Image (cartoon, rainbow, N blue to C red):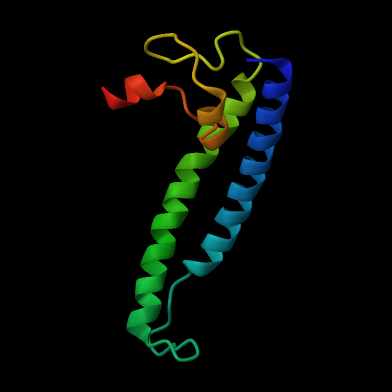
Length: 111
């Protein structure tokens, strides 16, 4: 990986960490308990509960993703960064840009 690619990836990771933190803050607000008689606009209580469930799943996903992103950012300068954890072959830069927390190449993911 070239130094330019590594810097581009570092900036992507920083942006992803910030976006994920913002998502967590927003989703924590959306997953507050719903009062039994609460109707939000035209939404019925059942629709509000369904939306809350969807937001809880998204919050759980974001809470799991944040430490992976932060860990990846901390390891970006290590010599083994960008190498597959299993087979030690280079992970394509495009894959890292799409999913920065990737630690497996596509061949190992498929196995």
